[in-house]
Amino acid sequence: NAGVMQNPRHLVRRRGQEARLRCSPMKGHSHVYWYRQLPEEGLKFMVYLQKENIIDESGMPKERFSAEFPKEGPSILRIQQVVRGDSAAYFCASSTGQGTSYGYTFGSGTRLTVV
Amino acid sequence: AQTVTQSQPEMSVQEAETVTLSCTYDTSESDYYLFWYKQPPSRQMILVIRQEAYKQQNATENRFSVNFQKAAKSFSLKISDSQLGDAAMYFCAYRSGNAGNNRKLIWGLGTSLAVNP
View 1 (cartoon, rainbow over the protein chains, first blue to last red):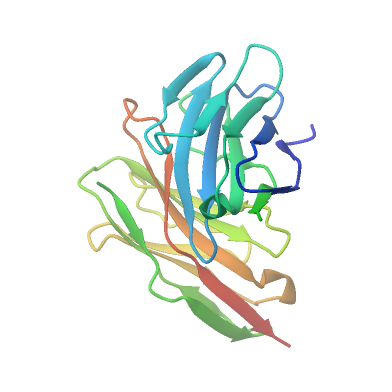
View 2: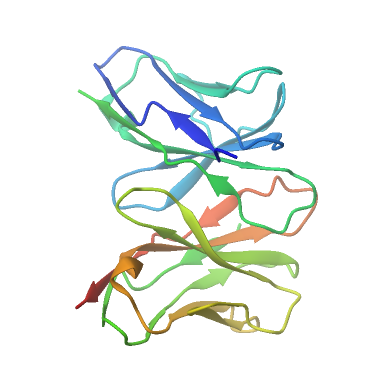
């Protein structure tokens, strides 16, 4: 079991470009969470998805950010027209969602740098 | 809304000694879960220990234990026999036990722990 896989590990984008971050959950996990960690801060919830459904996107900025978790393939966090303030580490976590009391399994994150 | 507060931005401990990291939280819920995560320089977020609010017994995982004071809304982490590999950022996190919520984690700002040889 490879755990939660996030790629790329590092991503550099120029202002105005698009960033696509990928997350493959653990085998058997159908629930995915995205968190953002700004420098010197804790993680902030962004979005919670199940296969083909967005359950809660209350933490997502209203513009430029979108997320999906298709029936096949990884979950994608997409940031359009990136700005310097988007520079952060983006973490994905997955769970079975079966009434779990456990924390989640996290990926190693994608560090996005906007230049 | 729930909040999590870690009042110690930085802590240090001598190798083999014991250190306690503080965490307080605010909630009106009675059913919830609390977690401590470790984030080493590799950035991987690693679950250290978890506590169910309905359990009075404090959780223990090898050298890691918690002091859970529900009435005081306090959830401190004790690391015994500290090792160099324990050096990391430690985050306290809260999760609602309400099935109607989405189970998202609410995080403190973290405590950076240095272990001195």
